[in-house]
Image 1 (tube, one colour):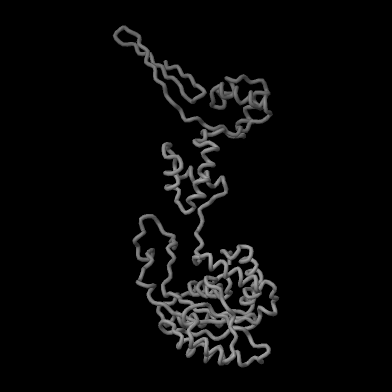
Image 2 (spheres, rainbow, N blue to C red):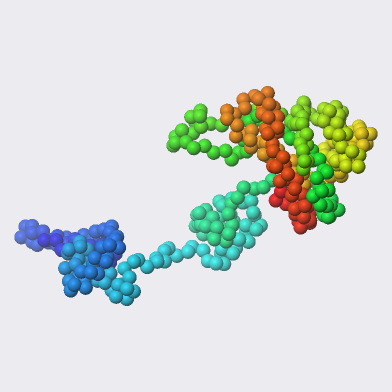
Length: 373
């Protein structure tokens, strides 16, 4: 008959005696078993049975476990007064603290590298997974995040931005309320930032409903001009083609800006802000603004973070993308932009213009560098 023995590694040896041709032979087989996990309720049941005086073997036969399993459980309860599993040490780490610090130094030198690239440069002679790289970086508080894009700032740009902000550091809200912030922005009919995702089933990647069609140059675009202040917003203007200085005067300054400024007494006239785009700084535009007594604020180059209207464009873009049904052509896009502009609340605008002192201070603290705005 076969004899069975359970080891602590969940192995048992199966021995079979065979009588053949007058000879008794024994065959031995080592068989591995999948260890069954004992539930906590069963563990306490075993402890209770032991306290009644039952032997390990009797408990094992009744519960269906080897008596050594029962004895280890009773011994654990005697030593710890508990039957729960202790924390397991797990597999030893494949990297040391010194290795981890080397990875952190590598990331400081190569902040835009992917985890496969970091793995190649970190410990090239050791077999590591990209998951190990990510886990070590996560433990150090480093996580791969979307890159923020900002205009390239040269030293002259930083100095100019810092000087502009230092000169206006003491302005109060009453002074900032006089500024009328203007800008142009172009909106594409079909927008994709390369990060679009879709919820789909397996093997349905090429189903038409799961594909994002692409068209050259976004399928067309609409360029608009807008102007906001703490107390009002001017009419949105659609710019046809590429903006020129003469067109800027004809389509924007003459019909929209100057009439609005003329409604204010000369002593309380607003101050007009536009950036350093070539059409804004043409001789014709400069002469026209001077002739109409429109005061402009000098503007530091590469400073979209100092113009609150930039956030208005972002807000408009999100609202256009959220429209249902989506816009289908350029005419619908233009109409939607004007409709969303009209629906902008002055409260939303004031939240942006009212924070100019914080923006100025952020640039000063960054010594003319990048800010979160």
